[in-house]
Length: 108
Length: 118
Image (tube, each protein chain N blue to C red):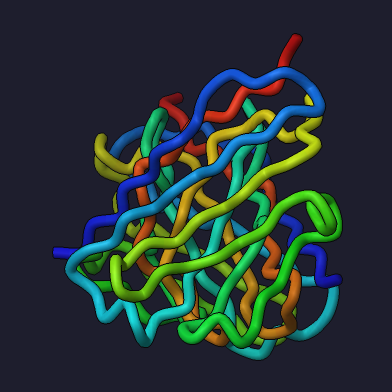
């Protein structure tokens, strides 16, 4: 099974800051990598797929990069609505489809 | 607008059974694979099971294999998760999500809470 490792576990930031989250796969997943945003009490929301393509309606301040085993999610200027947990998922080698444990972006 | 609505969650004793349902609208259900993903309290997302559009291909996580059964009714645009021999570690919010096997999970339901406790 492919293990997805996210870092850091928690990121304390201020609105307006640039934020970069990391996701590492235990073996290559090519570009079959998605990022999800989840707010408390809500379902996950697809943000980025194929490593760098924004899903419908996702603001341009969100961008994804990387391929193979190393991936990043960048928020260019953090907005108050962006405080949430961000999880990565690989859909290259399945089953199982595997997720990272998430990075919580919290208010500094 | 795509809408996925789960139902059937609740409190059940260890060893008991529960059946989750997910009603879909606004998507090409007959041609979509469907998935169940769970999230234990304070934990990350864990894939549980997937079923292809025609039910020809079905997959389970090792943690639920032999205890859970996924099925679907294309005529009524619904997917189900029959959960037997439930354990405390099955306590979680269960989400249904659409998405083919080589694609991300693009739409998610609001989730159904399953609590396994005596």
